[in-house]
Image (cartoon, rainbow, N blue to C red):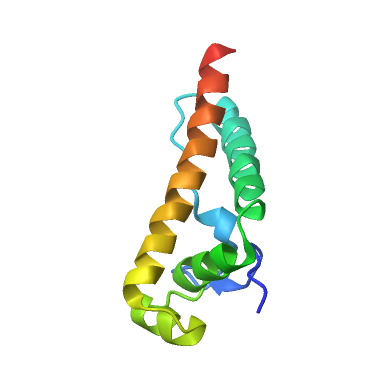
Length: 108
């Protein structure tokens, strides 16, 4: 199974969403905020693409298919604890990329 960022999902109003669409950015200036949000989403998408196939699968199961850890573990043949460890690693990797991006934005 291949995890995709553009896997279909429905929002609260039944409109189609993608995983990258769930990232929120707060900005004071709306036009600058829109540009920064778009750039930040691109950074996040690139960071997700750099994850291993298994990490992308777990991320998709959690954020696109909204499956609980125990069910993901059954699907992948892993314990729920291992799924939690994988998610912690994923979040750490994504956080590093976003912090680096935000540091670059502040330096500019």
